[in-house]
Image 1 (tube, rainbow, N blue to C red):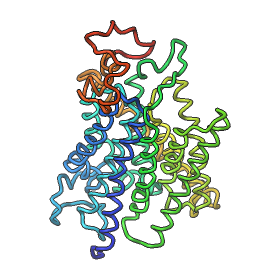
Image 2 (spheres, helix red, strand yellow):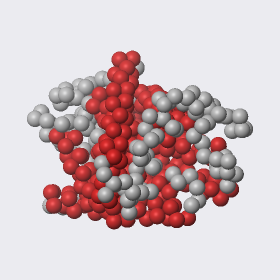
Image 3 (tube, rainbow, N blue to C red):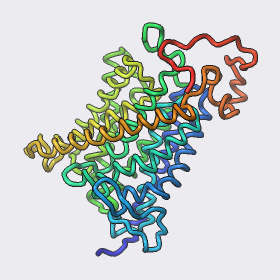
Amino acid sequence: MSEISNLDTVFVLLCAVLVFFMNTGFALLEAGFCRAKNAVNILAKNVLVFALASISFFLLGFGLMFGEGSAFMGLSGFAPAFDGTDVVAAAPANLPLAAFFFFQLVFAATAATIVSGAVAERIKLGAFMVFSVILVMVVYPIVGHWVWGGGLLSDGFHDFAGSTVVHSVGGWAALTGAYFLGPRRGKYDADGKARPLPGHNMAFATAGALILWMGWFGFNPGSQLAADAGPVASIAIVTNLAAAAGALGACFFAWARHKSPDLSMILNGALAGLVAITAGCDVISPLGALAVGGAAGMIVVMSVLLLDRIRIDDPVGATSVHLVCGMFGTVMVGFFATEGGLLYGGGAELLLAQLEGVALVAAFVLPVTSLMWVGLRATIGIRVDEEDEHIGLDISEMKMEAYPADVSHQGVQAPSSRPSTAAAPAGVPAKG
């Protein structure tokens, strides 16, 4: 048994802080991509989700994910005391348990934060909070146990830093949330054609995306769980190249399609490249990272357009970035891994393992999160009513505006003086 390393501990904690700072990136990106009348609500969700995740993962999630138990879930290590008495089978020997816990906590919170953007501008805050607790306390840890805790997918399936464990889990929850909530009021016309609902602050969105890009240098290299100079440096370079290729791939693909570059697509393209490389950043070469990231950048543009065609309203593109590109990147390990990848003469074994893992996670998370949304809709409700959505969630739920001196209810009539609201477009639910 190796001794605890002070250097490894400091490195992992610093990486965890970088991942924690990604909450700032998510908050700015989501707020910028959405309308000003919902900015406070979105910012509040991004603060609350980390607070909820911290307690939920501590009480139950960490034990389900890393405790001793079955191939399905852990059954020990709940509410750890960090005093040497906790039974956590999958904890690395070179780190104090508390350091390992904190690193895993920020990953769990990331999975829940992904959902926030997809359900923005029409979800009840209380429903989002309840959903986040269940996701972090039960759903995410079970999948994490399968891959990183010695469970069902621990042999053969490769997901180094979480393209599937973190991003696809959050992405499936985001997709089901967007579906069961229905599109925002006015998003689609009577013929089902999408109408633009522009975000209010692209500077926020850009700053958020760049913060997320920076945070990924904690997300991926930190998953080495040790200050191993060579692997950590290589992972950082591969991560950066995939992000750069994703931004350019999305830029040029959108430019060719729409005759102009689209900043929102460029930002999501960079994130798509990051999500896609996360599974294989330790086994994919720099050239492979360019291929995977560039393809992910183009795929995210196609996915955003496809979801609009089928009337899945995701205001920030979270489903396309995290679910679609998370699955894509996980499968690409089967092609681009320098050892065992199909393009490197490794045969189909790794590719089949990757496909099996993606399918198994989908088969679990898709129905479970669907049942969660249906249950919440039938009990406390998940969607604000038409009037509150029209006013904006800042006033109706938060009783506060993001820009009171600048907007001062500009363009929004108070509910007491506004004429009765016109019927929402077909397919848009009025209440949760």
